[in-house]
Length: 183
Image 1 (tube, helix red, strand yellow):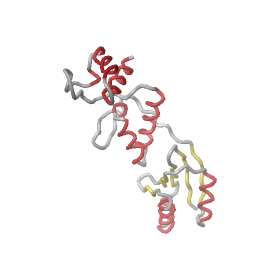
Image 2 (tube, rainbow, N blue to C red):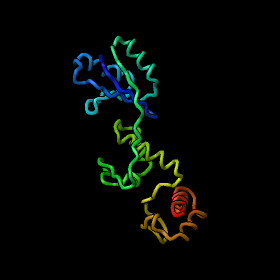
Image 3 (cartoon, helix red, strand yellow):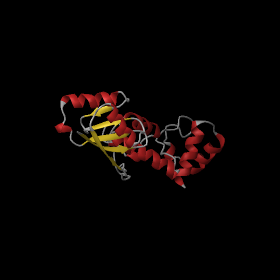
Image 4 (cartoon, rainbow, N blue to C red):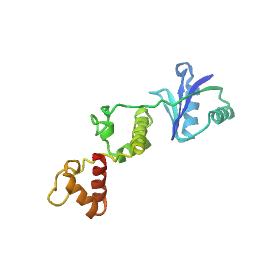
């Protein structure tokens, strides 16, 4: 019998295989095929099935039964990975940077392409930003005018106010976001 701990997240579910060391190679291959048929994978490093779908635990149990697999599924609450403002990312080209300082587009990419705790941290950071209504920090530099080459975050408030009122497009949005962050 396969023992699974099921956890539903906003965009995927994970089933921790509690007794993976007791399972036969054939059973593991069946689990791999089950996950692959649903665009998921059997992640041996975390000893989990990860499938990018929302599904009720009862329906999952029925799917296993239909496949003739003897499975016992228990449901777990998803962990919330609340991280401190000083927590840093530990991989990739932004290794060492604070999660809070990562660009929103990169966080979205992480949330769509990872199947790990880091994915959940990225999702939580995006959610936190959305709920706090504080615009992301802008590390970009100004590409024109007397402040060319300076970072938007370091510009004087009167200049930002002028830019927010008189410019169009991305520059206007950045100036407005920086002003909102300063409030």
